[in-house]
Image 1 (cartoon, rainbow, N blue to C red):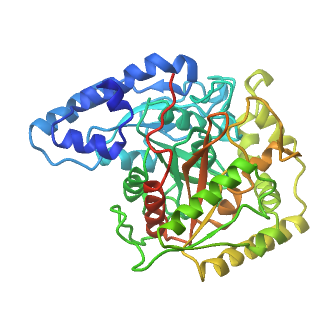
Image 2 (image 1 turned 180 degrees about the vertical axis):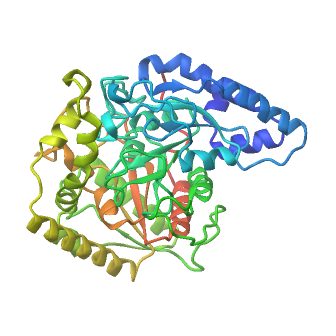
Image 3 (image 1 turned 120 degrees about the vertical axis):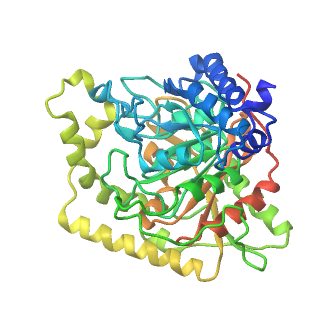
Length: 469
């Protein structure tokens, strides 16, 4: 029974609780037991919420009393440790913030709780949430539950590992360039980076450069992403970027009254892509084509003209340095890990290069706008390779050696442009590791994007696979 609980999606758990087939206490206990059983190997969890069982008992009493129940009533969820949680440690992956306990929840956490969700635990991340592997001086390195010698990614790697390993059904991560979509791909779960500004970043650090930062759900199923996004989206009166009131249908019903127009690409514009990853993207495209959707291979010339990763680096490095300098001011070297040192050592961008990068970002936005004039969704890789080994600094892809930052080649364009992107599994590598594809939608068209992802999920050859720990 416990195995059934820990690998049931959040929507399913909510229904079982609502219909009194499961109690919130059973569900929370099952996940706490799973954490105790496997997290010594995975190291995804940094803090367990002390009142989780108490909250579950209250949630059970509400069910038995026949009270009105929220859509996530009694369902546990986890949260990346850069996101504030009232009364629960939020230490941002650094000894500098050791013992920090916020007074208030981030907007995203508050909205999950308002829907009846129960905060279960906080999850691991890189120092300051800034790297593509989740390792830091405070809580150490997280491991991939599919292969402990591989990374679950970063910066939301603890979150992805917790969900993949059955320690959590649903969680919140943040994404600056890759950080919910990449970790989801490395562990075979699903995640959503919505259009920039759809979900407020209030209560999340660092806030700069906020024009690239996103917070989004990570889960087991597309319907969970849709449900969570419906709860998270909308302005909060504090984050000035969060102004959109475009409606969203959590039931995945807001679909075109025709077959989808789908383009797919594996480059150029992303850097080298592993042959197994490219084959998985093609297989996903063929699956949709087999259902009668209009599918074609495409190119986006703007991605070939302007390298989105270079544009991003020239823009964001200058903008994040003040927050890093403030955080480490007066702190001993023993409290500062690799990434803070690395980021602060990077050269400043000249004003000429900064302006050129801003203009390139506009060309990239225009390039995607032209693509979405004729298409509903775009299908691409998430990562150029499946989950890599810990601690590496270079990738060899199809015989070409590239810096590890090229892991972000297909994800960072959506942070530069603000477009929504979704990561979902559709394949398995020869080494038994998950391979995800990325689905991209037009600005604020999450309904169409999630509808398309739901269709592809139904065609997936890898549904229901879980790591054995």
